[in-house]
Image (cartoon, rainbow, N blue to C red; front, top):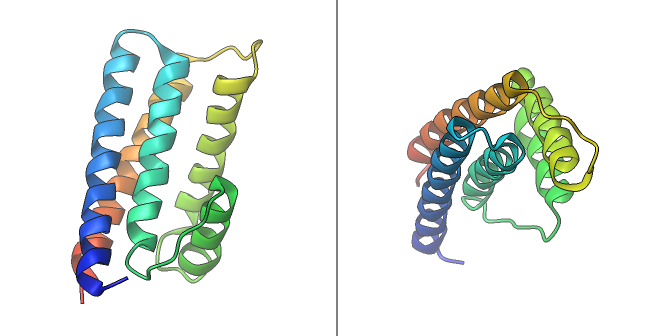
Length: 133
């Protein structure tokens, strides 16, 4: 993939992340917390994919995307370690929200997921802008 295409893909994924984040906020406001958790997670996921598209590298499975990001970006202190923990928590909450029929969502947990998505989006957008070659 050409550098120009990688940058375009990265920008596209940042925009996806922003859209998912906005949807999450709207769903939260409407008290659809499980759906808001899903969209917050996807905002996080698309932020990570935006970063990885600059390499460029891609994976089919979400767990591979997150594992690669943690190994190559969090563990090397390119991104703060705390964001890795927050991503793991968001992943678990999204899976519980989507697949566990008995999962009870607390509004404060959903708010926390949205905050994590916002934090990572800011970090990802800065990283992408600083690392366009």
